[in-house]
Picture 1: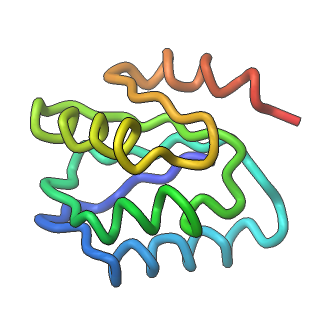
Picture 2: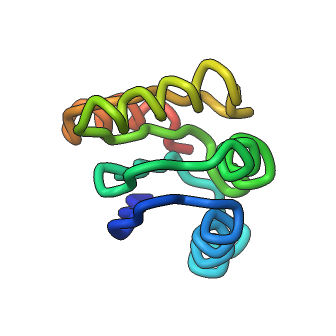
Length: 107
């Protein structure tokens, strides 16, 4: 699954829930390793990160987070190390490397 976040100044809890609901509507009961391209997200709230690390991980067997800017890298590091997602999660700056890592989680 490849999820591209639109440009957003702040990913808050409400926006995070909408993103997850849309993804779950699309995949149904399936579970996929997923690449989340957050290169255009400027900031995320603690509440959004907490939600995404737990309930928001429904349908995701592993997460590769694609980042670009130093600020987005910092936010992704906080998410991985502080919010501690319930599935395997790594941050990448290269899409091909992210996809290669996710291959091990295909069922």
